[in-house]
Amino acid sequence: MYFNQLFGVSAIKMRKLGVFNGNVKTDNKMFVDPKLLEDAKGEFLGAHGDIVRHFSAVVELIKKVKTESLKDPYFFAAVRAMRFKETSNTGLGCSAIGKDGNGIGKVLATRIVKQAILILPHVDFQPEVLEMIGVFTEGLGCDRISDMIVALLKDRFVKYTSRVTSELQIQKTVKIQFQGKTYVCPQTAKRAGSANSDRGISGGSVLRQPKMAEKRRADEQASAQEPLSSVQGEGG
Image (tube, rainbow, N blue to C red; front, side):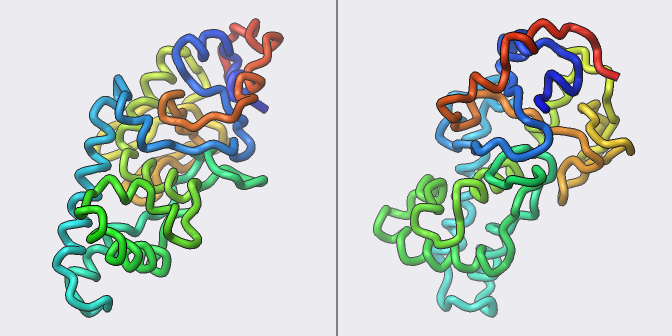
């Protein structure tokens, strides 16, 4: 079932707004591409800079590492900065069942930092290389990188989701608390949800991603078939 079917909104209107009409039951086999964020607008204007600043801080820690041990304060801090808890309900990735993220735990974060220690000196410690960390870190696919980017930009995704919910006039919604503010987002679960800095949106509400922040499959347009575009009613 696609987003417009569940909420009774126009697929054409979603397309005009640049909103991805994804499958709400499972992952959609696409990922946030950090490079595409360089040209992002709206809530995502400056998002790429946020990512670079986070990676720059990690690079500065790595420069000061003396031993690759969690007893080294800079190594420990770098690993902690590269750990990310999963963000629920993004609908991105390769899972055949469900739509939760994977997150990056201590073991994988440690592996990332160790690889970065090897590579960064050869690229003048450019923080942008961490956007390509999946290329040289075993076990870190593009889905985990995508989850990492969503975690870093969670506040922007929540704001974007809330605005699109209003513009599409979605009626089946849930109020969530995030960073001390209240947002209205689509609700896909029977119970109301909430948001926090660790898990993102829970309770079944959905984060909707802008097209420019996704790498798309060649057949993506098939996700909004014309028969569905005539649906104009409000969900409930």
